Image 1 (spheres, helix red, strand yellow):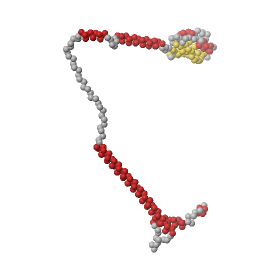
Image 2 (cartoon, rainbow, N blue to C red):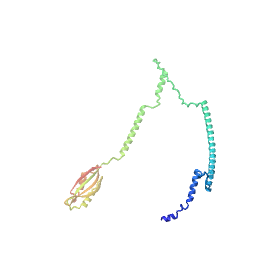
Image 3 (cartoon, rainbow, N blue to C red):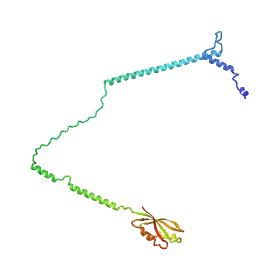
Image 4 (tube, rainbow, N blue to C red):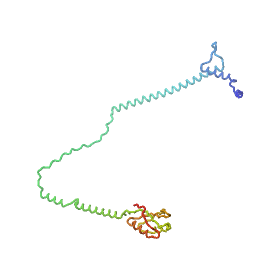
Length: 265
């Protein structure tokens, strides 16, 4: 691997070129090198280097001079503009000094009038004449605003009408109907009683204000089950006594009826 690498490496074969390049670099930086006799080494490459550097240096100096002149002209223009602004500012300050600004407008307020106290009436009063008394009687006969009694009667009539309308409206509004939820325990005679037929008989009881609900069979013991049935009744129309009496009429199936739960709705 090292032999293959060195086959493609040419730096040692071109070493003289790198040496000449290094020499030219240092001559451009520090000037041409001198021998022991003080003579400049004669070389075509070394003689060409300083001449090229001087030409480039002259070009750069000329470019800097041109740039300096342009910057100088810009500075002169700025100085002229500043001087003009200063002159204008001085003129404005002098004008403002000769013509002061007017004071802000004030709101005009009208002065309050002085109220003079009324003169106290004199204690001496002359009796009214006959013509003045007649005019006062005529003024009393003319009622410009109506009588207070008539106004009271009208207000009372309007109030009575409104109360009557409110009472009629309230009477038309339906009242709250009191209802109760009742859970009944209907017990059969024995375990041979047909529970389906017994429930059918119980539900056959129909009354105004009675609504039957869900039902289920609950074990009691010894194979006997009782019917637990829910119903909703209106308190003013259906009582628990009437309901028990109607259910116990089915003597072939029903032994007794008990109220397991009673709740107001």
